[in-house]
Amino acid sequence: MTEDLLDLMRSLVILMDEETARLQGPGRFPDMAETAQAKVRLVAALETSNARLTRERPDWMETLPDEEREVLREAVAALRAASASNCAILKRQIELSNEMMAAVTHEARRLAGTRSTTYGAGGAIHRVDGAAPISVNTRL
Image (cartoon, rainbow, N blue to C red; front, side):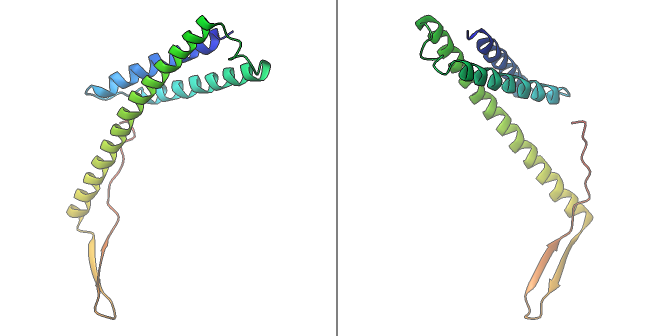
């Protein structure tokens, strides 16, 4: 009864472990968008399968044999572990990207000299940074 659910969980674990390993190493990965789309599809299929099981047999979890329940528990634990490590590396990659973009923006502003200073009526000084003249390479 839970074979589809287990297959989807195992596939998702394999995909997340592969993505995590690739992100921990150096280099660019032009197919990361495909990996993300594959994860979205697997999660959607997992949710659909779980909803179908729950709709067809609301007590399906309680009626599972002990061996099958243990296999399902182990699959969920593996999915949780893979998700946690994948989440951590993705969070760090996003932070690094944001830090790099901030550094590039700061340097572009400095080089372009777009900072201006205005004096207000009460003598207050306001400093304004203009937009940074940067372009984004979408192939990264």
